[in-house]
Structures are given as C-alpha cells and as structure tokens.
Image (cartoon, rainbow, N blue to C red; front, side):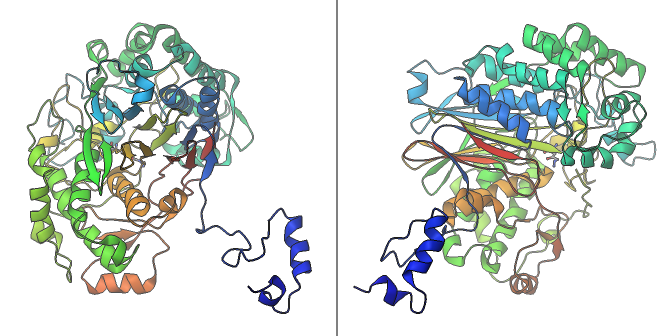
Length: 600
Ligand code: DON
C-alpha cells in the first residue's frame, strides 16, 4: 500500500492537509480517486431533505418553499408560486393567460380514495392533468386575422384585443388547489396578495425586461400606469413596484374562488375593455369558462413512465412520439451531443413536427389518430425513414413554405413535496407581457394566445410553426400549444422527475433533451438541464443550436446536410428530482437569471 507522502511526490502531505483541512475538505489517505472530493460533473443540483420548488423568480420560489414548510403539499406550493409569479414575473407569470398542470401523487398520499375524473393509475400512484388553456371567444371565426387581401394581419394576431383568448389561469389554479391542495385557497394566495400590495423590489432582470418592452407597454395607457413610474420613467433595480389593483383582484379570487375573476367587478372591467376597444370576449365567454381535469398521456423511456399533457397541447403527443422513435437508437453509445446522436434527434424532430402541425388540435373539435401516432408500430415505420448518413430536407417530407420565427414568454415551475408528489406546470401569456394590454381597474395583463391558432394554413405563426386546418380558429376552441409540463417515474413506479420549459415551439424538444440527458446519458439533473440544446421543427429546415457545441461536431452535422443556425439560449427548464432515499434535488435553469430552486 503506498503511503500518502509517496503518492504525492514532492508535495508534503502535511502542507496539503493544512490547505484543505482548513477549507473543510476531508482528506483520507488512500482516497486516490478523489482526494479533493471534486464532483463528478461541472454542475450540481440543489439538495433538500424535504421538498423543493424551482421557478423562474426567486421570491416566488420562496413563497412556494414557505407553503411546503407550513404543511402545504406540492399542489399548494405550485399554486402559491404561480400566483406569486403573476406579481413578481409580470412578463410571463399571469392571471390573464392560461396553461397546463401535471400532477402525480403516490399511493401513500392518496390513501386508497376512489379515482376522480381525469385520474389514472401510473406506477405506485395516480396522475392527472389540469387543462386551463385559453379559449377562443364565442364570436371568433376562422378568418379572424385575415386582411382584405387574404394575408395574415400579424398586428391583429399579436397586439390587438382580438389576440386575447378567454383566460384560464385562475380557473385552473383554483381547480387544482380545491381538488388537491391541503391548505385553504386564501392561504396559498395570501403571499401573492402581500407582494402585490406591499410591492416587490425590482430586480435587475425585471428592470431590463420592462425597459425592453416599454414601447409595447406604453402604447396601452393602463399598462403604462401599472409598469412605469407616474412620470413615465422606467423602474430601476432596487425600486419598489406596488400593484394595488392586482392585489385587490387577487383578494377577490382568494375570497370567492373563480367567481372573483369570471364574474363580478373583474369580469365587468374585462368585458368593458373588450367592448370599448374592439375585443370579442363577452360576459358569456367568461361565465362559460371551465378548467378541466384530463387524463394524461403515458409514454415510456426504457422502463420509466413519462406522464405528459394531452391535446390541446401537442407537448405530450410529440414528446412521446419522439421518445418512441429514438428508443430504437443507442444514443448513449453514440455519445451526448455527438453529431451522430444529434443527427437522429433532428430527423426524428422533423417527422414528429410534421404530424404535430398537420394533425393536432383541440380534441373537442378535431378527431386525431392518437392511438396510431403513439403506437410502437408507427414509431418503427418513422424510424425507418431516418437516413443514417444524410439529412432528409424538409421539402421532401412536406412541400411547404419555410417560416421565419420571431422572438417570444412563458414560465415553467416544478415542485416535489415530502410525500413524493410531483407537479409540473407551465403557464403563459404567449409573448412577454402578452399583447401588452392591461385590464383597467383590475391590474393585470392580457394574453395574445389566439396567435397559437392557424391564422391561415401554410402561413407561420410567431414561432415559425406552419400549421393546418386542425388548429383553425373556432368559437370556444383552444389553440394548440407546445407547452409540455412532464413528469417521469422511476422503473419501480416511484417518483423521479418534474420538468418543463418556456420556449414556444422549442418547448417539446427542450423537454426531450432534459429527459434524454438525465435518463439516457446519465447526467445529474443540473448537468442535464445546463447542457447545450438544439432544435428543429421541420420548417424552417434548419438545425438551431445553442453555444457550446464543438465546431467539429457542427462541421460533421453540416456534412450530413444540416443547415446550422446559431441560436440564443433555448428555454428555461426548472426541474426537480426525487432521491431514492427521500429528499429531493432541484435546479433552476442557468439560462435566465433571477430564477431559484430552493429546498424545503
Ligand atoms: O402554448 C404555446 O405553445 C405558446 N403560447 C408558448 C409560448 C412560449 O413558450 C413563449 N416563451 N418563451
């Protein structure tokens, strides 16, 4: 056995011990593999012996953590964090938008209660989703955004009040909390009310975001008043932003539930704005809005159940299609972010987006061949279309005009509680600050989700998605989404992961890569989230990539026929993981600052 002095050569053992024992590192003689106790990976998740909340804004994550500490469960914490985000992250957190929530609860937390509508057994527990996507107003028609010459009026589709779908967030959060929360609704909304009433300290991120959106927000007198100082100047980091009108609206919701939003003064203010300024949402639209519990789609990755959002999100269908196609490749052997693995992933993405764009829509309006799309047989046929040595140009898969993507905001949060219940929820106004218009007297911004519909078949929307008739506008219909809040179980049926992301059409491929990095390539959660991402969506026919891929890899991909497109950072996938021995891990995606994963 070699003694430490011999193994260290010229350095004296005593000297090293002095350096490192002082810094708290424990040196064991013979721990030759890792005497410095360095981590195996360059990124480390946050660790907790209890639950965890990971969201885009630190104050909102702390709200969720406090709710867990006060005995709330994962749903209480997720709902509290979501309402807090409506105050602290006005660009994406919202009560004027919509979203989806996916929940899994272990049997130990449900005590054999009968299955409720939408619940399904998965692993050693049960899963459910809540659909609170916006709806087209009853007065909306398929040609809503077409100009007289037949072209799509992009301003109408994204900036006008016509771009606003009937908001779903309040109905969704209240339904989730009433069904599954442990604390009173008022208790989980109270922190958001306090933040709105007493004010938040404007972070550098919020100051920068408001400044960037100033032209759009100032175009609306109500938004200008809410988000700028009385003299019109922008808030600087460290200033206090108070939102008393939003506090009052949140107070009504805390006291009255959905009725505090979909009826009474808040509803009246929203409808009056629509009537005065050419919007379509009526009192009847608001009264009729219901969030719905829906059965999740269950996919699989090498023995791990993947619990995902069904239509009207394309998130689950497209993610599960991708996993099914890709399970036929040994991606681990090909290597993480190698040209070979990225090539097959891109080819699979194009095939899956072809189906997404042509076939998917709101299930209450369109029939979709979901069983076939998700079947292993269909996946093998799709897999056989992937050429190992050549990119198949999009034109050969679908002869459509390429679209130009624009810039976007949405926000995802993940929670795990002490019982192992998992929540993933993604909500959105569509663009940052939605259409920029706020409801006078009620203190909140409106979404521009109607742009997620197909305004005209073949013409791209803001995310460059070239979609078809299945996603055409119709009264009461929900626009197809790409949001993909997703949960994963371990092969024994216990809890493992909750993840999801903003990013428009890229959300699905971002979630795919987080799952593959963690489950196939064996990275820890933090590395799985941090690793450079790529994206392809059929049209435009290009492989977008973040910084961090090797130029050698990029050259190999080019040689296979891929058009490369360097991209800004993709998404923000705040994720949590259950530890087998109890406790949890969390990671706030480093791509957007201001976020926080925080343990109970
Ligand atoms: O539902 C959707 O697919 C889009 N409205 C999401 C928008 C989005 O993620 C923008 N954020 N970066």
